[in-house]
Image (cartoon, rainbow, N blue to C red; front, top):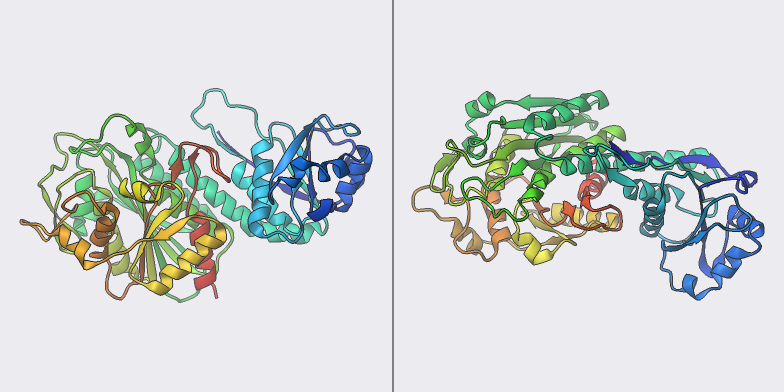
Length: 489
């Protein structure tokens, strides 16, 4: 099973602190400032918190950081976690404090004394993001997380403030679950079924099967899946919360496993290609969050689900396929399959829905990792206004994103002798930019568009501030923020 935490809120009641077991969490502000509950803990422990506040160890802590104390005298709790967080600190610091709690919690219950914290809802959000474990495929699961309770002033108001953040956390965890799943479990059919289940949340969801895709002329998408027995699909999800306005479109690459096809990848590290559907996973998480928080916007999401395998029927280097747009593509490298998937799905989205803007997400190129590492996703766009709005949203949510250039000089490298274009450029340099230039050919001139290359951010070998090792859910927060700020009025 997947383990994650949904914190609860109760009104401040200092009388229950002394007898609480498990973990107690307190916050100290600037100069060791304490809330009512923390002062009560200080009394119960004989001035322990006052001594901590004056220590060198506490002085070295940044906002949101803390220290753990074992078996504190005067309390029934086994652990007392002391975090540095002032009431004036920003949302990012509050989330980091929550993440520190989330990382530390175990099977024991945790009581978080947040009455003196100005951003208790953000603390709870940080807890939810970090207290996550994917154990769905383990025969013996580790201990479940204990209950996490935040003691606050004005319980109902804080809970109301936390509700949309809880919806976001669920969207992030849904994305992580999808990206963490092995490919023999998350087939294209299983993926589509999990998205169909979101009809229960109020989303309109439909699945386009191979016969329909062929009738629509999606030769680029269908060519990718020729070597696999698993069927190629497009899943369309619609959230209609914004009246009669045309929708904003999200497009996700959903290659459930990528061997590279006939242009097969090296064996070392190929097991990581279960995450090559990270773009589709992120899109699904965004839609789940929008539905749960009842977003007042119209958003349509389309994901192309396919498996790229070598087989006697598989697409070959040198093959020429015809896209839904009508352009022909010479397939130079079958491992550059994601752009073929996106080309048809993007064109279909524009033809059918005529969106006010479009963002595609894909674990598209290894070159983006060479350029930006794992701290930032690559951002490419034909529209400065939409792009700046997204970058601002990403900064606000603490999700790294960096805009890279585009231009005709890169586009010229896609020229083919036998077709309208090649699927890869000549040479290896600028690979991520050339890939973006390929995708731009399938964006209509009047469609504001962003391409997000998330190959470096979708899944990590080690833990990060808000996630354990594995899938991160990167992009759910930034895209939700973009939609909220730009399309919900």
